[in-house]
Amino acid sequence: MTLEEAIVSDPEILGGTPVFRGTRVPVKNLFDYLHHGDSYHAFLSDFDYISEEQIQAVLDFAKRNFTSHDTSALASAA
Image (cartoon, rainbow, N blue to C red; front, side, top):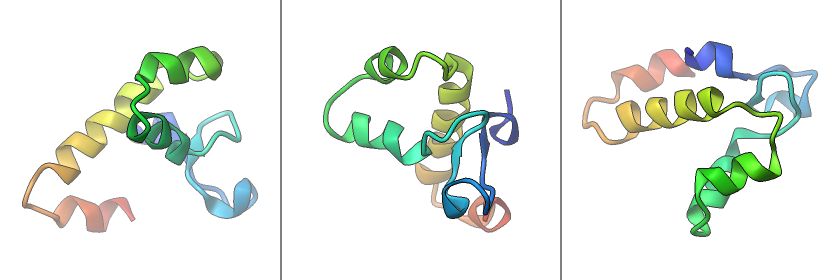
């Protein structure tokens, strides 16, 4: 699953905040869970209508783009 398939940013949904496609759940919520020591499985349990594939697409994007010194991909993601 691509990032574009996993999330959407639409001005009509939460003012353009990136959300998991088909929901009103901000992507930030996943990172809040992880930041507070919860696993992504806990997130999936609380938001069972979000797929593991969607979460994996977001985490793969973060890994590729935030663990590299090359920031060129960030410009195209914005």
